[in-house]
Each structure stands twice: as C-alpha cells, then as structure tokens.
Length: 224
Image 1 (cartoon, helix red, strand yellow):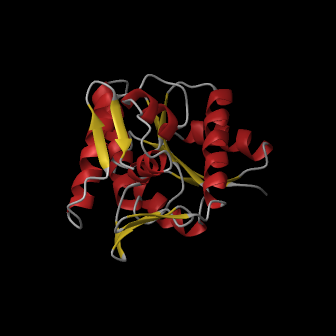
Image 2 (spheres, helix red, strand yellow):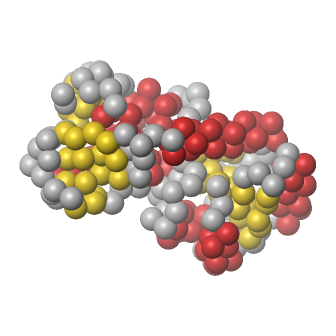
C-alpha cells in the first residue's frame, strides 16, 4: 500500500465512495465517523487527513485545533460552507486546504497529490539557516530562538519558510496564500494578515528583532 489517508466524515455513503476510489489508487484509507474517533485514529500515523467540518458533537474545526500540534501532515477540510468567514476560520485553525462539497474526485485527487508531493520535498530538506539569534531547521520544520523552540501552526511555519528562503524578496498577500496553500486561488488577504500578526507576536515573545517587514502597498518580506 502507498500513502495513508485518514478520512473523517459522518456521511457513510460518501465515506464508502471515497474509500473505494482511493483504495483503487493504492492508498490505504482509514476512516472515522466523528471527531473523537478521528483523534483515536491518529495512532495510525496518516500521511494526510480529509476532515469534514459539519459533524455532530465535535466539528472539524475543533478537531483540527486539537490535533494540529500533535501531527504535521496536511489537513484538508471537506465542507459545504461557502462563507468567507468559514474559510478563514478553517485555515486559521490549522488546516492546509479546503474543498467545497459537492466536489470532483479528480480535483480532490489532484489536491491530495499536490500536498503529498510538497510534504515529500520538505522532508528531504535538511538545511539550517540562522538569522541572528533565530534558527530555522527546514528539515524538522521548527524555529528556535536561543535554542528555545517556538510553536507555530503548519501554515504559519510555511509562511516563515517561504519568506526566509527568499530574504529581501517582496511577496504580496495573494502570492503568499497561493504558494503556502498549494493551489491556484484568489488570495485571502485576511488570512495572511492575521497569520503574519500571529507569527510576529510569537517571535516577539522571545526577541525584539522584527524579522518580517511590511512593504506598504506591496506585501511582506524577510529582512536580510
């Protein structure tokens, strides 16, 4: 078997259909019908998680918040919600992507493939970089200041990695969103603005140095 997918949805017919499809594609599919069961299935060490938002008792956003600091694999939300606020909340809770129901199996398959390939590229990156007192370990995907590891969400770290590997280069909010989320879409500036604010705040708890600079009217850059 190939990659492991943890599929979390209380729609049994959808679960059966997706399981059959991805098993034919040589994935190993682990299923859960609710948030509690999903948390228990984390011990299977999935390579990617497909997580329904609308579930009874514990919705997908709460599940994501509970598990995000325990796992590093991509989390893709499956959702019928289309409001901007829901999409923003999904990404800020630690999700990596979302796909609206009803969706094309080919599109879902392509999204999964893109995320898994990006994870594979990152896992092969063992480079360290030092920026003054700050050290970024691109292999372990962590950021340290004076040997103290700072806890970032996966998407927050992706932004740090993007900017820090291109010091001095300005990225607008739309481009940051597009690159870190891994697919072509209109950038959601509200998400990026909030994530940058959170990154700065977390770094600010350990250092007075401002690593991410705002270039007004253009975007953000990592200071050289």
